[in-house]
Every structure is written in C-alpha cells, then in structure tokens.
Length: 216
Image (cartoon, rainbow, N blue to C red; front, side, top):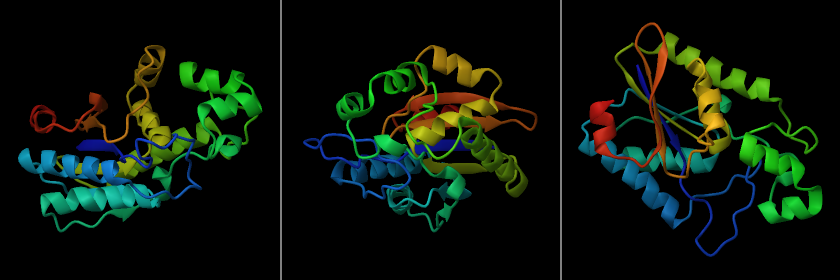
C-alpha cells in the first residue's frame, strides 16, 4: 500500500500575515492554495497513478483541496472525511502570529515547539501529544484493514497532524525531529509505503512531481 500524505494549500494571501490556524478555524483556500491543489492533481494525472481512495479532515481547506485535485485528474472518487485527520487545536496561539504569541504568552513554548517539536504544556492545546499520535496510528491501521496491499491512497490533512504519521516507521519521527525536518510546507507531499510487513518513508515534504509517484 502506498499513501500520499498531502498538506492542503495556502489559506493566506501573500500580503496577509500568517497566524496559527487550528481545527477551530475553518479557513478557505486562497487563490495560490487552489493552484497548489491543481498542481497535485496534474502531477498525479501525468504519472497515471490510480487512486483507490481519498481521505481528508472535516475542514474545508482539506476537503476542497482534495476535490480540486481529483477534478484535475478527472477522477470520480469522492473524498471521505475522517476526524482523525483534523488539525491540532492551538489553544491560546489561535489567530496570533509568531510575534504576537511571543509578546502575549512568552517565547519559551513557541520556541520549543518550532525548534525542538516539544509539545506546549501551558497554552491550552486541547489534546495530548499521545492522543494525536494515537489518532494517526489508528487511521493508518484502519487503512490496512479496509484496503488491499496494492492500492494507492491520498490523504489530505494539515501540518500539525501529518508529522505524526512518521511514527509508523520505527525511529523515523525522532530522526526527522533531530534534523528539524518534521514540518510539511503547504502544497507539499509525503510518501509512505507498507510492504505487507512494515511501513517505510519514500519521500517527505516534497513538491508534487510525477517522478515521485513513478519511482515510489
């Protein structure tokens, strides 16, 4: 089984300040985000990759992203919404820029999250890191039960949740964390493969490119 993990496209225009947007902020894609979705769809179409299912979170930015990509592929598949793919709840950081978080709440926790991926303890995030990790693991295990080993699955989610899929591969989350490589940029994709026995990472945080799907 091959899973393509896609981060949705931009929700802020180039002239807008980026703020922390969690599961309680249902922002739409802006024009550049729509273009990113079309780019993914075109790359998948050019690679002639057959998708067997597409999953996304309840947020419109992931659902619309998936729908646009599928439209570009001329695919009849409809996205399946799964709440386990939802973005994190960033608590007191919600709606604030990085600078505003530092000014209003102090720099320690945001610095630890941005640099060392240490889960904040005093900023009102509504779940524990263990719960978020369990959601990703549960979702992946369900895919193995629902789909055949030779199927290709597209999963559209958000940066906060996508990184936890690295826990499917022993030691992978720690390796990417130590090298500062966990973050997935908007519009970028990651690839995971299950060979019948274990998961492996085939690529991480890459721009959509037909060559990725052909070689993966």
